[in-house]
Length: 147
Figure (cartoon, rainbow, N blue to C red):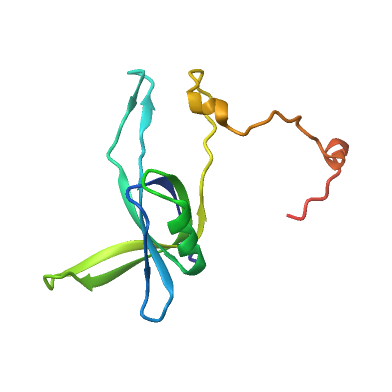
């Protein structure tokens, strides 16, 4: 049976990204992403808030520099990568374990709100209304999809 170690996390940064350089000159960025599993209780007709889950994420190379430059505390972020648990000794000599996601993809999500109560910032968004386009092949219904 095949195995696959792929993790995708979408949440918000708990603090500013920490960009450092290894002794060999490679850039590495550490970020902390909070996710929540809040849900709407239909019976009570209210949102139930749950404690956030924190995810340790490591980003390497050019992507690390871009993450440090483009993101800051509180920003929405989505990362995709593989997880690994490693052991290390803290400053008191105690053995610790940490699980980290090594991200190979990082995205800045765009949220589209359907709220009726617009804020003043909504008026400054560079959005324009466009017509939905249907391609000719779609109308004919005989598209040969490659998958």
